[in-house]
Length: 419
Image 1 (cartoon, rainbow, N blue to C red):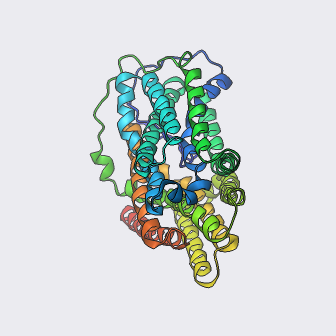
Image 2 (cartoon, helix red, strand yellow):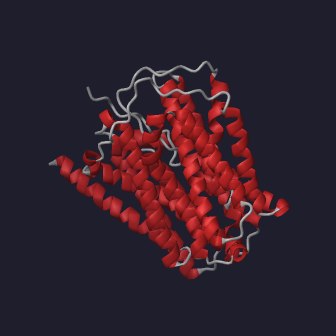
Image 3 (cartoon, one colour):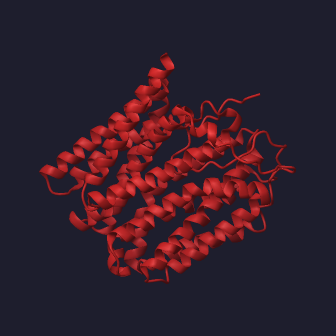
């Protein structure tokens, strides 16, 4: 019998939900109290996101440090995002085949090793390759972490607490990560940003080695994922594009913000980090009201209003770019409007995309995040490279194009459903 799709509205865009088989044998229970389990699992979830945000304050300086172009440095952000999503398809089935523990430990050690090597290189090509390996390690650790959560807590009320706490922690990473990165870079140099990531990953791994026992249910077999029916679903593509529009807006924002605010508006690294954090804080504040808005407007209505906020922010960005010099009010304040749209959109797109796939929810979720990461990484990067990464045009252009496409598909979807 088909199951109802899981309620994923509490998940932020940064949280990765693993590939999963359905149905599966009864999971092996852990004997850890919930606080102890959270201390064991949370570091791997946080580090995957922190590796993106803690690095932002030094992005404008990296072309000079590495002797390369801003476009190559942009790859260090884009490839990380793409690999984080592709890992859903790669590492999920691997964890079903060989177990959660080896995937987690292997991924964490790869993340730690690549982070420490990043701190020691001055070659642009090696730096890009190591960022790709760092993302692969982060993706493997994330998949194994959330697969373990499913194994252990799938039928227990603690699962909602774990996902909610993970979401709350990840919401604060974009606010605090750049500030931490700026402080480290100012006092110790940019290399210690990656040393910090490597040391934290090693500490988490050393904590996990004796305590993270295997939770893969006995008798689980890695079935071949059924991608075809999902990829043929118009609803899946409509809501996945909406999610891509929302997450891509934030990706383009943090890809361009260092060059706009530090490079052109003259912000210090600390000033940039505090300013950048305000967009994350707007998202956190909006999250408190998201359920109320969704209950009033429904899934389609909330997506439409989220896209409208992206368009409104794009108009403000374009006006500021045409009429004024780069500043807090012309670049960051419009992002506050977009941030509201990101939350409204992210609150409903998972349920909208996955509603028809309760019987293959794990595969559908894996595709949902993978497709989103590819769209964001490819289209977002093209916008930054082609429209000028030190201007507001990439963010304005991405929001405009993706929002209009999503609204057009939503209108067509509703027309199909009404006939």
